[in-house]
Structures are given as structure tokens and as C-alpha cells.
Image 1 (cartoon, rainbow, N blue to C red):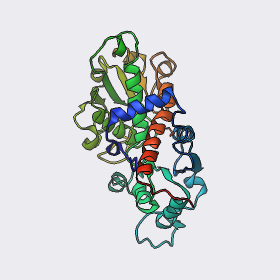
Image 2 (cartoon, rainbow, N blue to C red; image 1 turned 90 degrees about the horizontal axis):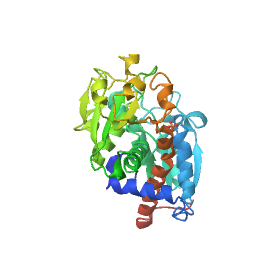
Image 3 (cartoon, rainbow, N blue to C red; image 1 turned 45 degrees about the horizontal axis):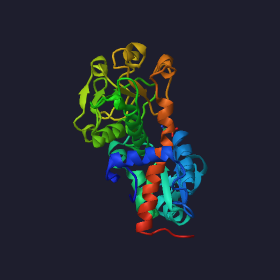
Length: 336
Ligand code: CP
């Protein structure tokens, strides 16, 4: 794996999931793989889970990590080609990224969308500028339209839960595919479509689930991510017999970045859970309690959000190991 920007960089989703689960069983098995290597984690936006889990994953592989909160501590970056920099931006990515390429062997980057310019966001302009100018492997820590480390984590979590010997599930003898439902939930802010896009893309690539997406009218996602998923505006219908429910808000895609609906009836609570097959409930976090998900769900036995967030380490470790192994075959790494 040269870069990790989306599921398209993964040759076999299931193999990557199994690798992550093997790391979960034996975190330090590859503790020398990243020896002498250094990863830069650049955050243009806030983070808790991504930042910490990636650092832990790198440490498990023997790799040093340096975090740089560009959005708060760095010079304001310019991304437009041929910009006349007489405004507020101080440094062009063309100048900054090659320097980062000298300091680091792998670059992790988190950027968010503008939610104003759909064409620019959906071209993944910002992260691609770092790929173009850094000259080193780039790992997405969430970009304008996708969050692949989160989605890999989500598939890992569904896979291990479905295949664990719980009553009526997986290793208990069950061979059917799980029914996985992604449902929109209300939120007070206009949020990116990244997590929903990415989850849909990864579930489709994984191909091991019956996949349903429920959202209010006018909240359609880009079809390039949803593929052949069943899509409905009837949340109760979608939830029927669900084995996993992934709850997430997103803003409108067609009329880009808007909030059309904040109907609290879409919040996932125990009445909704009762429609499911005792579904396990997922959310990427951070979550707005009693807006997206009720307290009773988050504090109840069906929530697997903490297990899910814990698995961020193993997803990151599997991805970083793939990038490190690739760079051993094609050694472009440098010392300063
Ligand atoms: N889920 C997720 O990416 O969390 P952070 O924003 O805290 O990294």
C-alpha cells in the first residue's frame, strides 16, 4: 500500500481486517517494523481518537510519531495553484509539504470539507496537494469526503462481533450475513458526509453484509459511495431485524452542506432498538447525547461504541504496517 486515502488503496478488505484482528491479539508482534522511521500527524481540524490511536499504533510498530496541529499552531496554508498570496495565507503547500517530506517517512493528514464548495471538496483537493508535493506516503486521518481509518475500524468491529460466540450469532453456528443499517440522526450542526460515505463504501467493498441506508428525504448521499445499498426514507422499516445499526448525522449532499431536517423522531433510542434483532449499536464518536443517540442506548448493553473506538488502534496499525512493508519493497525513505 503506497498511500491510504480510501478503500480503493486496499487490495483485499478481509485480509486487512484479519491483519488488524491479529494485531489486537498480539500488538507487539511487529514491534521492529517501523524502527528508525518517523510519522508526522498533521491536524488541520480537531481530533481525539484518530490522533491517539494512530500514535499508539505507530508505537506498537516501533515508529516515532510527531503531532503538528497545523490548524492552531502552524502558518496558515495556501493550497490554490498560482495564488497571489497577498491575503491571510502565509505559506503555500508547495513549499511546506516537501519540507515535511524531508522530516518524515509517512505523513498522516486530517482535513475537513468546506461544506460550501462541493466540487472542490469532492475532488479531495487538499489531501491530494499533500500527496502531490510531500513525496512520501500519505495516510488519511479523515479528508473532505471519506474517513477510511474509521471505516476499516467499523468493518473490524462488525466482523469480530458477528463472528464471536454470542447467542444466535456467528460462531454459534449462524451462517447468514448480518443486516447492517446506516441511519441518519439529527444534529445541531452541518456535518460532513465523510463517515457515512466511507462506511457505505467499505461495507460495499467488504461485501459480507445486507446493507440498508435510512435517511430523511433530500439527504441522499453520492451514489458512488452507496452503490447497490437499499435506500429508504422509512427508518422504522429499515431497522426491522437489523443486526447492526450505525447511527450518524450528515448534512445534505445535493443542495450541499445544508440542514433540511432536525426531526428528533430520527434519534435512535430504545423504542427504535426494539424494532431490530437486538442490534449492536455503533457510532464513530464524538456523539451528541440525546440528539443523535439516547443515553439509554449509549449506556446500555447493545452499544459497542467503546469497543469500536478501541479498534481504531488495530485499524491504524494494520494500515501503517502495510505502508511500511510497501516502502521496504520500494525504498524511497530517507534520512534527513
Ligand atoms: N471518530 C473520530 O475520528 O474521532 P476523532 O475526531 O476524535 O478523531
